[in-house]
Length: 361
Image 1: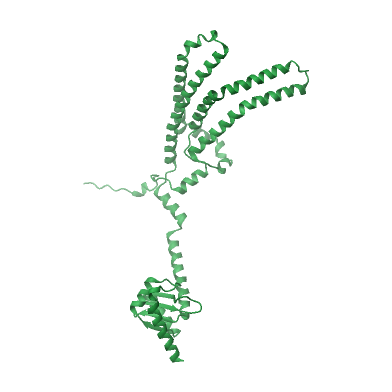
Image 2: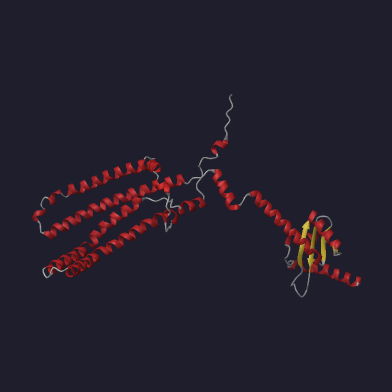
């Protein structure tokens, strides 16, 4: 049976892993987010026709007042430029009363469409000039890319379907459109506005469905574009956490420095409590400075042996108490006071040491 061997390194560079939070943050800073322009377009169209229904009478009244004012005062105009400027200024102010609320609503809708997709986002990097954007070759690549083809097909389908909806709406209104000349002006305008409103709402809702589908597609493409390989994730981890070898050396150096400080503290100890071969704990007690005795050094194995050697060098009393030595080692860190349940045993040891000191004196 033939053997098949695969070089797994060939697959190491494949981008098969979801992007890490750091990669997502970097992409966001560059303006790379899952966003569909269709959402803003659909909301704008839908909002526009809803405003037509809600603010139509208000806008018509102000426009009528503006035209009436302009025509009424035009007869009194003396042909001078300041008089014409005054008329135009008043007309523009009245027009602003109509346009300003509508523009304000559109601005709010535009911001909302941005926030619901990507949240609040400021991308200074996007505003920085990049010469690659004006490179003709790069421009041709974007024009004839897969993304551009998808956008083109999407636009064609969208225009065709919107055209069909408009056709259906106009076809349904042919009955009264043929008789519009026989109606009063106000009735004709009301029918036209109502027809436009219904057509606009249908188109807006359709585009909103298209926008939801497009947002799903854009998000899928975005997730695909920021995928990472296993090697990239490893490199990112190294950058965030540091190289494992360096971290190991740092920890080793920290342990060495801690051991050195511990050995330097041994001469200040009052007694060394040991298990003859395995454990050694150095205890210090200064009544006017401490609430309870404190462990200034501890160790087992080779470190315990070094502690005992240092104690012998400085003539510090060493007492063999295996159970107490083990309890102190397991319950108390260097620099900490001993726990309350060991007070009696340690006090007994310290009293013995103090008696020895008095006898030696």
